[in-house]
Image 1 (spheres, one colour):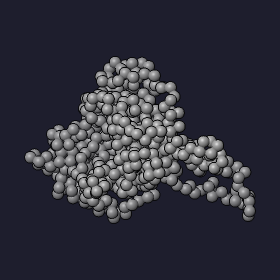
Image 2 (cartoon, one colour):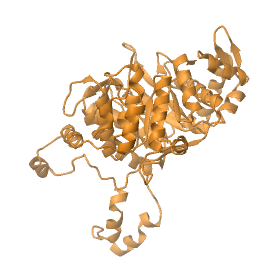
Image 3 (cartoon, helix red, strand yellow):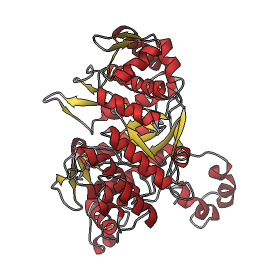
Image 4 (spheres, rainbow, N blue to C red):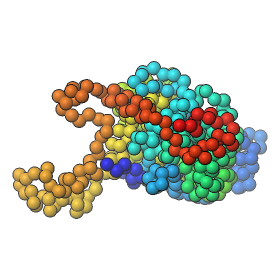
Length: 488
């Protein structure tokens, strides 16, 4: 069965056109009357040079909506996040209502196959998760999903990207932590691409830098945003306003905060380098008002990210969304229904690059090998829902209806054989046997089958994707990279 990806969504619209206009107007009012605090001096100067009103004592930047729209209008409406397979099957065309789904980051813990316990994540997990993603067809990209606790922050960027670049051909996105790390990651990617020009022509890496809700561009991420944009590496500027904590408790107000914060990041990227590839982004969710902790599996997260997709479409910006997570501590029924609910909602809304949709449990604190396999199945079903129902002469099948007539059958029809593998989603993990065959096969539940698949992938021999000469050059020229990442 052909993997479904890049399908046009947009059938689900939680916001009316009037709702979209009101949220836009409120966001523009925030820019004009409240402003955004910009704490990186070089970024502050860019806003001042663009004509914004800058308070040098508070670092508050204010501007009319017309200036906001002018600046974000320089951002490309479609960007290509490429893979490295020769056929280009892993390329993701991000924009409009095309939908792609994958992993997310950055968890501090890992849950091994078959275990309900957790441990601190390490660099080897980034490598092994990449191997999993490479084999799971419905996961379209690999966003680096764990933070390695076995390296210093100065070496985090090169080890996270290096661990993935040698194990999967799919597009790799990751949060970044130091300017020097960003530069070394770009250098490593240029070696792999063959030249700086080749990397910009087909960018197979992208980076994430986060404004702070509400209404703040901090010094560290401001500098990292500018570094990525200056180098024309695709950069995502997502924000995570939480209802009742860093945003008002209502979903509509959260969308206003999210819109302002992410547009501020888009503007910084464009002021740094007009036309720089940049994704408007949303990680909005709610808090558990009993203790103010972040919730990942809430249905409201799905609603807000679906609404944010509509805002991105309004601004004609490529969109990075969040869905598919759970607050469950294990891979159980709660993990399944929470993940499926938000994945379907956000994908049907036409969100472009849906991260966190594979592998996360426990409020995004833990990445689970088994849940990657379970989510691969959920994402296959989700993309089938996005595809919808094709209605044309072939699918109406009038000739077949006439041939069979009243009381006829279609089991032996050539039409059935021709379309059965494309019209219906064929699960790889789900059990569809009767009870007898299921029992004879060991009566395994979903988690057990997922564990078996995880171990099958991880027990296979290590395989490098990069050529030997490139790996040797990377090991020689990229400081701080753990050598085992470049070995078979």
